[in-house]
Picture 1 (cartoon, rainbow, N blue to C red):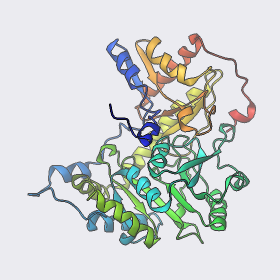
Picture 2 (picture 1 turned 90 degrees about the horizontal axis):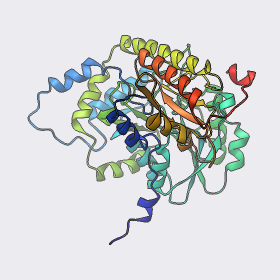
Picture 3 (picture 1 turned 90 degrees about the vertical axis):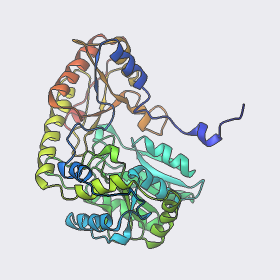
Length: 409
């Protein structure tokens, strides 16, 4: 029997999806599973995007340009200008989701054996993307006690070697929901400039910022214009996760032309999804206003509810629709599986993503879980109540002293 490749064997499984068989078994047993493990919003896709597909008048579903339809790239450039990011259509490469944008970017910027620094916890699939590119992740740890703020620049400096070629951030963050300030990003820019590193910024949650907070794009950092790469996607902005349309954006023309060669090898991004995505650019601001108001309500129900449970601590995020909570348990890997296999409250149980899969440092996050507040408000209230009751009877509960500093974040 032939063997599987070393790269295939080293490819990590998703911590977000690996509990799916237990959830399926729970549903077969008659339980209602509240899926808070994955960032699949229940928010309606803008009607203008759905209508573009329904009313499409084409005889052939043709290839687009490998960089994406010119009309869509021009529309994207106008969109970015409208949010204060001055880029041209020639600096945009349309990709099959933000995932492909990251893969093309890593393959274009890094050699096998190079290292990238990423604040942890980070989006778990970064592990897979770097694996594909043969790149090693060097983690710098953000602390839950500090609300997952950007680690001190000195912490980054200590990790830089002759193999370090880049830094990757997500802003607002997945899994933490933390929003980096302009000041934090300017500090990061100093170290990028000093060591001539690439700076990748995954900004797919830009529209979802709360409490008056405003996102600041790395594309507006001075002095590192040729070093910055913006990763974007329609998945969350327009609740179009299944469209699989993203973008890689950079003012570095050599980088864009290099990434285009990888894009040519896969021919083109999906035509139908680009049609919907281009139409989605016409989404009225009222749509986002309503969505943000809804997410703020959901966040407050979930995060405030979690912090009212004895022994639980959850910083309040200022963006995206995720939070990371610390639980008074021996292991959230065990706790999350136990919730699905052995527990229900009024016929309901909760599915979360154990946070250890979002850390690169072994042993971190073992008492944390990522929760996506992507369900309607009554379901989130039920989820909080389920978790409250579950912690009363979970056999692996441990006593963890809470601190005033934690509660004040």
